Every structure is written in structure tokens, then in C-alpha cells.
Image (cartoon, rainbow over all chains, first blue to last red; front, top):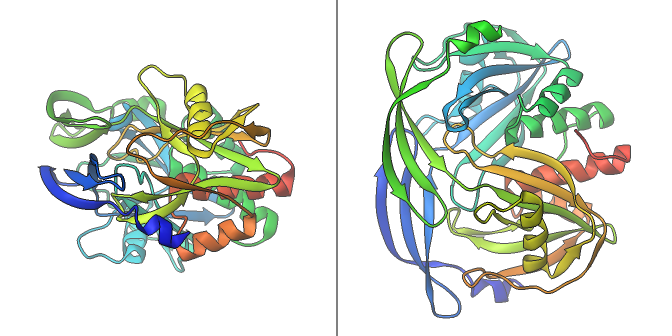
Length: 187
Length: 187
């Protein structure tokens, strides 16, 4: 099978830069297709991000904030984008403390996934810890959020109500359930 | 708490349209912050998408395709974007048959989540079925893919190897594990 699908790799024949912002950039690539035709691909470039599943006395630390693209408040894992050249583990450690005021003594990588591979290269690294101590909350200057520690039942209720509705946080709840059921983190 | 966070809703003072493409569009909004300052938000608009966790004789139907934003082949759930005004359930039914050649007799909504709420409004609806019959494969003209049915052990190996590395498909594997462990789909 690999031989066959190797034919299908999309070679770029032209890249049109559209936008370069403070978080994302956008380009449109023209690609050659296996049948000899061409197509365009709209591609968002993102520096990547890190998030933490942090359990404090059996509750999950989450933050509630206004999400402008959705025009609503959302409850999510503590998370943030990587600074230039930053190790995802360090970003996870930094974001957890900045957003929640708690420091992780250990962090274990659970999963690293592309959030939207059809149009973006954003990769999100998700870490787990149940070893946390008090640190110092210090949010970004344009970031306003509330910290909560929630039970699994509360998390499931927030999912049902749509107050938790992003991929990483729903995935975190599944990881948490698998951890409670099997005693270990999933692959 | 709701009273307090209501103060933090980000009102738009200006919207700058940047790009309008065949799949996404991009705008930069200027917003008013609670402390009286302003900030910009880079926002990708996406029509939404639907994906299917389809089990055939205890194996998961997946497709392998070249993902230009990642510049590599990826194994993923059958999925696709919503056509204008399309019901996500109908999109899921359509994409499953077009991409894999199998038709779902039943489809149950498992989760609907925002893939990347920091910069995009894309919402992905994930359905489940273990009732499928043969249909007619018919991919889009610029879409080239391979269909496979994989075991849970194969899925976990593909995750470890990075051949499965997108949010919806990793989440699907967690859903599948929870379904096998508990006999039901998670919240």
C-alpha cells in the first residue's frame, strides 16, 4: 500500500502568502494531484500549543474564559501557545502556573495531536499531572479568566450543557475516565 | 460567578476581513477588554465538519490520505466539511459513504466539539455506528485516499507511530475503548 499512496503526495507548485499575524499566518498553496490536475490548499500556520490535565485532590483544574471565535464563555483545560522555540513541556508547566496559580511537580505527556489537519498545522501537546503545589497566577495582559476545580460528574454536566465543548477538554475527560477505569493513562 | 465574568465579554469594535477562500475565511477583530484597553483577535471561520466512528465486524473504518498542512500521510476517521446549510447528520452519512463505500443504517451523535477555540470557529460533529452496509465510494475530485478497517491494537500502534495523530481520531479511539469497557458511549 505504501508504494501506491506515495504517488499521491501533494507537491507544491506555488505558495501565496496571505497574512502573517501575532498568532497565526495563512497561505494558499497550489498543489499537483495524481491525475495531473492542480488544486489549492488553504493552510493556517500555528506555533503549536500545550495543555495540562491537572488533578487536585481528585478534581480537574479548568479555566473559564471568553472565546472570541465562538462568541461565548468556555470552560477548558489550562493551555496556551508555544513561544518561539519553546519546549512543549516547558510551555505546559508555564501555562498551568500562569493561568491557575498551581505548579506541576511532574508532567507526563498523554497525547500530541493535530487539532484540524484539513486546514491547519497546529499541534497540541497534552500533559497529565496529579502532583501539584501552589505557585503564582500571572495571566497575559489581554487574558481574563476564572479558575475552577471540578469533579468528573461536574465535567460531564458541563459537556452536556455546552460549557465544555472543545476537543482537548472533552478528550481530557475521556482520558480521566479511562484513567479511573483502568488505573493508567491511555496510549 | 456569572455576573463577574459577564463583564469580560469581548465586544468587537472593528472587523477587518482578510481572506475568503473555498473552505475558510480569515478576519481580524479588534475587541474591548475589561481593563479599558483593546486587543486584536485573529479568527478563522469554517463551515463545520462531520466525522463517523464506524465499526465493521469489530474493526474501525479509517482512511489514509495526504494532509497538505502537515506534509504527511495520516490515518483518520472518515470526515468532511458541511456543505452550506447541511445537517451534520446528513454530512456524516454522506462522507462515510463517499469516502469508504459503506452506508450507515443508524448514526448516533457522540460529541460535537470546537477543534481550536483560540483562533477558529470550526465545530466537528462525531457520530457512531456499528450498523453498516455496502454502498458506493465516490471521493471528491481533488481527494485521493485509501480505506482500511483496523483493530483497536492496530489503532493504538498507529497512534504510537504517529500515523494517527489528529484530535478526532485519537478521541475516537478513546471513545471505542470506553465503549468496550463500559458497554456504552461516553457523555
